Image 1 (cartoon, rainbow, N blue to C red):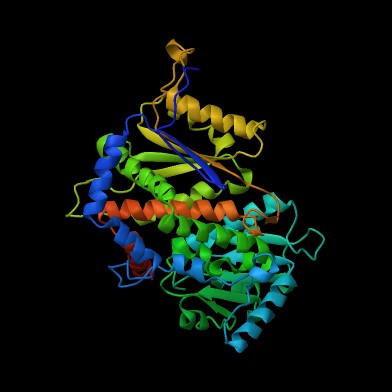
Image 2: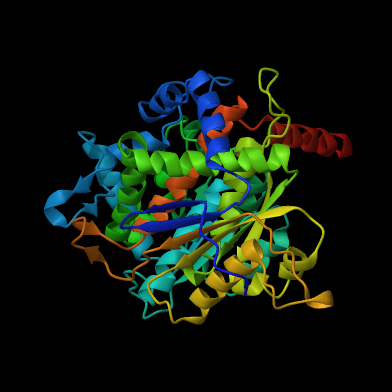
Length: 468
């Protein structure tokens, strides 16, 4: 390779080490962006988010995902285990939750129906758990419990995934904030045809009245102030809360730590601002309109899909008339790193597209192939090599961010007196939310609405109505 190049930004704590290789984004450029941030009152906007003020200004709502992290009931007398049954003084609700928990634990097959954040979040958490624990959490069926996630509008997906399942052993979670999403309702109707026992359906929604229209009496509610792509912190993830409350407690603690760092840790704030500022600069001044997010952690293989929705739905807006920036959100794509190396890495290394790259890897085992691949690829992408000439020459000038996590399979970690499993994932997701929020603030756009998505729903309904 070429001579060693120092990263342009470094941040490190007990959970993550971040190194950025964006050679042209100088300290002077950072200061320019920070001056712009001061003019728009960025710190005040961050406080508004963390204190629950109405930051979703087009819909007149707060964004309560930080509030959910802050107020989640963590039992400090039980090694920091999350309490999934805390309902305050609403004892009837608590009893109902226990009944639904028993129903879930006695079901051999668990099917989650949802789309967007209602699908991506719980699926990613379960994958992370399965990869970490190497067994089915709290499995009472000798490793034979099945988990399925169904999304989309093609009924073949439902038919294939439920083939051979006994309706009497199958529990359905119907996850939808509005409970009006066409894809989810279409699959729900198919599920009702499959299993007529409505006691085996649990709705997770912010719109209880809509769920009742389908004769679903088992309803778990969350607040309308929780956006779908931020709902992973809510009861959308109730399955994970029930399966492993200690792991979900770690996830919440990770997000909570990121929120506290955003408010109280100047080094962390600078790190997140660096991510946001450089994203905007690369897109607006270097025409780098796409970014690959690559996970070299098998349990986090769906992390890029989750981030794709988080960023593109939050930042995919028209530019603000008051902003100097014409380009808003980047195109986000990506996947599991080792697989990506044998598909689109050829374009990254020798193609003519101007892209950026984020790489996530576990730094616990520096001798593993996955770690070696992540480190080597990050260096080749950002620095290139002098050894390859002619047709073998690679680009070597791609802006690259490297996230090294202290991923661990242990359940508890004495360093912060709480559950460790999923802590790093919670910390990284909340950090990415902060990155997205600061980017939106700098661009003068609202990261909490999605009117473009709504347009697709409206015109699909009109099309179907015309076919009747």
